[in-house]
Image 1 (tube, one colour):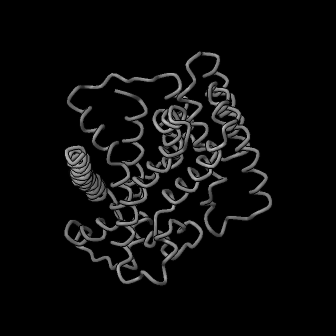
Image 2 (cartoon, rainbow, N blue to C red):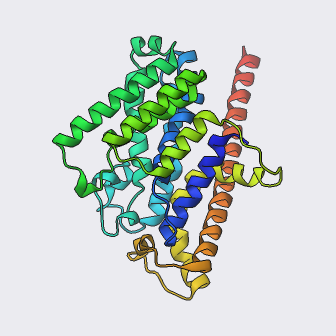
Length: 322
């Protein structure tokens, strides 16, 4: 199995566990940022260079934003006016207590980072420099580290938990560089850069191990029976992330004999569920997220096919008229 896909699945499971139980592994979110950069280098960047425009980035951002906004509407039913910023993907700048009831800071920051990348890759000179992608993305990582540190010194973002793009842009760029590192010396150079960055930026051990592991081990042998499970979890990581809080509140009482109101939803983050019950609830939430993701993707595919079929029929009708 591809190690990046496996690590994405493991990271989202660890995030759910950390929100629901005492079994928290620091660094799981950083790994998701890194894997977002890896995926960007694998798909969107390649498409940008082929088309010579940033449309693929904008399309990807829309695919990320639409289900997220739907989840925000679900969580903030009745709060549309006073929490307008959540629907504009700006909840990272407007934390509420408990902070997780309004929006999804990780996705907000990720989209803001890709706005920055879209602006950069709209410049022809940057696209030309991408002919040497490993060099460009490695330089971008170092530059983002320096800019992030400078902004951090001038702007205290502790009140908003440091949930700002300049704190995570370098991790996304690093993920891009990892994807393009094929030579052993490139991988060693990136390892040295990461270790140097860990001095300036706090990098949890899990993130360090994950990054170095993906760099040097691209595929991992696993029993065939578990590969579809990890693949489904990785493919539905967005839906697991945006639904597990609300679904946790809905299932909390049924599974654990407790009651959670809407405004106390964020209390789940304080590790209030222990032992096997918490693990069971976390597993259920992951499974529900996978099911929601599969359903949404099925519906999206059906709608897209219908639109394309209608467009094709209109073209055919026009040609017949001619």
